[in-house]
Image 1 (cartoon, rainbow, N blue to C red):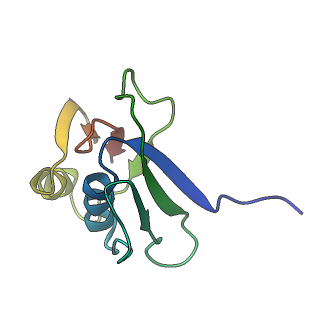
Image 2 (cartoon, helix red, strand yellow):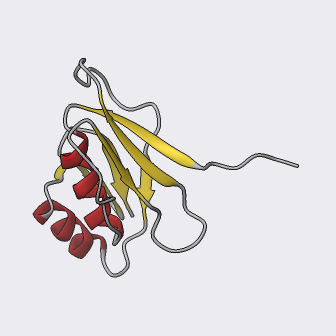
Length: 111
């Protein structure tokens, strides 16, 4: 029997800040026991991996080797505007795809 992805873990400077962003972006909640040291976000809906956010002492220093590709529920422009209001920033704009960064610089795509 194959394995499955139970959770995805982010190293970050402030676990609560990044967890709040991703919870809002994905339409779910941050666990009530979350702190700046360690935070948990349960997957919205069935089947997605849960997310952990853990404070680490070192800063992000290079481009992610792995990233999320998010599917915009309406237009890419609308979703980019919504995510920007939550604290993300646009890094690159391509036809049908926008590369963004969360509040701590973790890259992701909106398509």
